[in-house]
Length: 289
Image 1 (tube, rainbow, N blue to C red):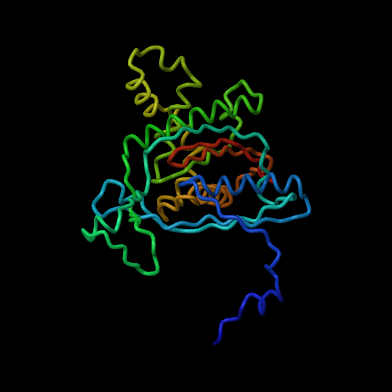
Image 2 (image 1 turned 90 degrees about the vertical axis):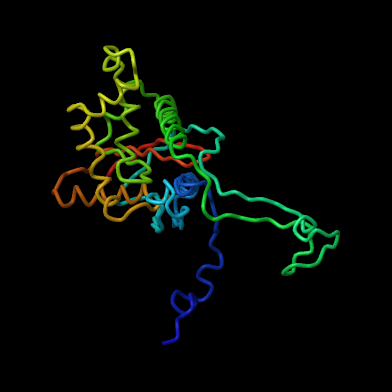
């Protein structure tokens, strides 16, 4: 059967006047795209927007990052009258230029390759330099985790400032949705925010690193994780990493969890904590409709 064109399926020139943009910023690109378009909808309330988060991320075989690689896509319909989540306008941001993860590009002259002064045309390229691009990233996993923790903690504090809140904001959130390069990343990193919001938990131990490890194993924190973070981990454990889409996979996982448990979450708030290597974090919240 011959595949129908978009014009045949949806009508002539259906997409000819649609505005289209492409936003790339590591694992936070889809969040950026969503928020840019939420602002667009606030200015154009009769419009609708589709945001697509998609990527194909792979590491070198047998590298320490191999188990976090993944692929996938999620599409979101944004409208001024949402049926699932309504996002608040306040956004906390923390940005810092670091090299925790990057795909290297190297430029080399044809002269160096050929050992001559000639500049032959290669595949239509007349420039005397060629660029090599490596699909698999260069990364430092431990350093990347440190950047992740630092940025989400700063973005969380900035969100409190932007929203004019001084209390423990996470207590407002029925669930917490974070970027999950692997299933337990959220619970292992949010403990830093949890500890800073509860400084008395660290006061009894002069070594904060050991203190945070103890907090992470405490009954109070584990109960907190079970209620707020665990629902987002379920799909991640089954599906794996989606990179730009992982925070939204966690959102779907959480909604499915509440549906299966017949929980009433209307008007409850969810906190979003996004991260992209390079690096940037954003913190914001949404209310269940």
